[in-house]
Each structure stands twice: as structure tokens, then as C-alpha cells.
Image 1 (spheres, helix red, strand yellow):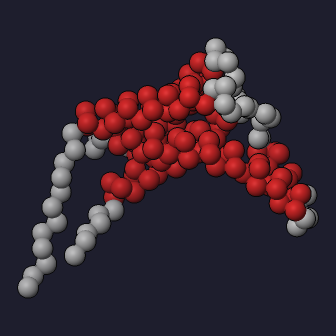
Image 2 (cartoon, one colour):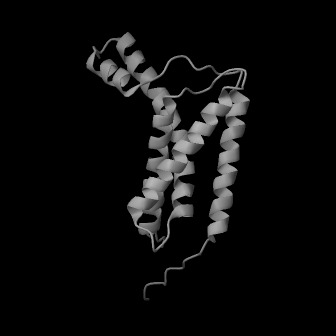
Image 3 (cartoon, one colour):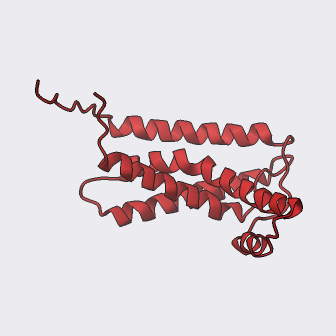
Length: 158
């Protein structure tokens, strides 16, 4: 018995772009749904995270502070990972350098996060703050890396 051929299923770029638009609309709907139910308290800056790690003293209060700081960062990054994957797959092409594609994904991620933040000014309550755009962009870039890995790694089940 020889090895089986790897079967590739091509997905048209317009289907990927359509999925990107759908994910974006779901993200907007999620924020609209949470408005009035969840509240933005204080910004989680990189300096605040470093300070909470430095002052970590293994007590329950310190652990809760570090976890609370990381929870919002992780949530903001995870929120944008699917967006980053689909943006990378939509923008990547054979005649464009990968670094350009990553820069485009970062620009699109920042622009979308900025639009979401401006839109939240008109909602009853904010869900995220301006500093969260850093974490949203980081999530979009992690998604771009995942999209790049998806394009470069072939998985075969036997």
C-alpha cells in the first residue's frame, strides 16, 4: 500500500472575505449585546501588568490582581484572533511579501478596533477602552501568525 495523495480543497478568496465580514459583524453584535451589561472600569496598560507581576507576593490578593489584569488582556486578544486569521488569509498573495501582509493585517486590525471604540462612544456603556486597541492589534497579529501557519503547514489524517 502506497501513500495516499493529499487532497487540497481550494477556498475562493471571496469566501474568506465574506467570512471576515461575517466575523466582524458578529463582533459588532457581541459588543452591542454587552452594552449595558458589562462595564469598562480602568485601562490595563503594559506598565500596569509589569507592575502587578513585579509586586506579586503569592498572596491571594496579589494573585487575584495579576489574574484580573491578564483576564482583560487575554479576552481582548482572543476577541481579535479569528479576525486576524481571516484578514491574513484574505490579504495574503503570492506576489506580496509576508511582512507586508502582516503590516496590512495590523493596520486593518487597528482600524477596525478604532472604529469599534469610536462606535462605543454612542452606546449606553463602554465595553472596552482606548488602550484595548493594543491588545486587539496583538490578537489580530497572533491570528495572522495562525493564518500564516495554516498556509504553511499541511495536516494529513490517516
